[in-house]
Length: 212
Image (cartoon, rainbow, N blue to C red; front, side, top):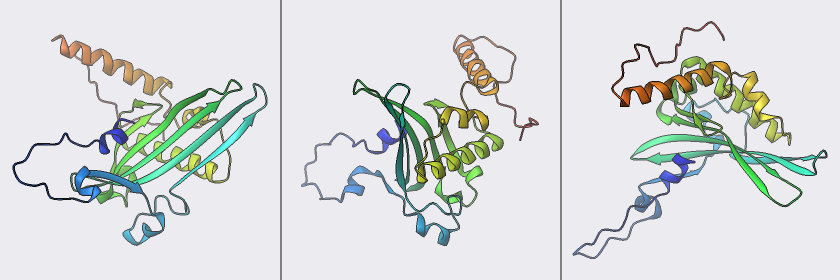
């Protein structure tokens, strides 16, 4: 969402006294993304998505209870931003109801540093689940990647699982006690910090928890 919008934003033109030099689209934009070519990744040691042949796909399921259609999709993009390589993974859901109205909900967004993508857990730089930023630890990153790969494999077999249940099972749903508690605490601490109040508490998410 925010990242995807940002990479396509073009700076306002600046007046020049000399004729402008014609540039290619990527150079003009400065930052850009293209659909990933997954078959080329193993040669770079990127085996995290091994077995996934398509950079994007979607699946739908008819819901007979309310005559709606549920859908899930994913896309994997290879991005260049300020001369840095990034891998951008996005999962989305939608519901098309009997009144011809569509409700969209982002499921997950992951941004990886391509330079370290041979170890995606450590390369994960940013994680959003259901449009909410999630604090990263190694365990959270590992669970997020596993959840994403599970959903991608389901989509590629034309299945549409209950993605919220999947997120809950992998313990990265924003509504779970641990994640929600951290987010609420961080919001309170940030507000207190802006007000000059010392809460005396650590706002970091503990990484030495016992859950795997």
